[in-house]
Length: 235
Ligand SMILES: C[S@@+](CC[C@H](N)C(=O)[O-])C[C@H]1O[C@@H](n2cnc3c(N)ncnc32)[C@H](O)[C@@H]1O
Image 1 (tube, rainbow, N blue to C red):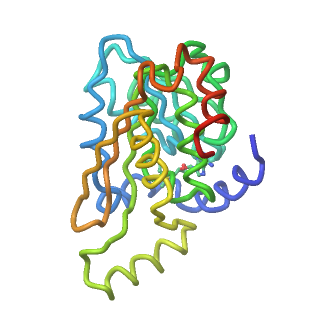
Image 2 (cartoon, rainbow, N blue to C red):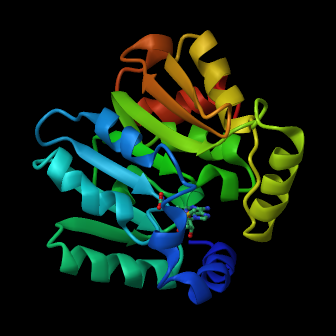
């Protein structure tokens, strides 16, 4: 795992970890809707990359009791909070120290690929969100789904409010960017999967769901996906 990312995230979150869940509730909107819409089949796996304090993973067992849950988080401070939350709520989830960029299906313990991968307000903290979503698709089984919620273009907000919000988010190293959505649009247009996009509150945030194709472009199995990525997908 990149110790840079882990160290940077620890510095951001160490002072906030006790108040994190309470303070994020009003402005990380769309998370509960994303969780409800995962709707996994019984026994399917859900991997949340950048799971933070485990807030989403704690909610999932009520929505999908038989799902296999995996959380990935670079920050040791956040992982400690997640472990405590899993204990408090009696949640059976695996927690892995790692970053979006460095994961493999082997490190996730899901050799056939994950059924669902979730990014909840994480891509806006990643330097190259388009590369991160491309990489996340290599972690999915054929037909698996990527679920994203994050800040969006804020186009319908009053310009001053949008500018103030962007400045404030910048203090926490959060930069809303269109790159991940554009990458998924491109992949959908070239037949690699199906994309759904829903804007929330005038573009304050956006929900995206991408279902990886079952057999398009030579996907005969998960092992072939990285080869397809380097051969024909923009990375
Ligand atoms: C705004 S928090 C969101 C936490 C959680 N997903 C939620 O919805 O409450 C962003 C999280 O992404 C993590 N993160 C930042 N960069 C990351 C990366 N490159 N790979 C994986 N996680 C990352 C941070 O450590 C932090 O826990």
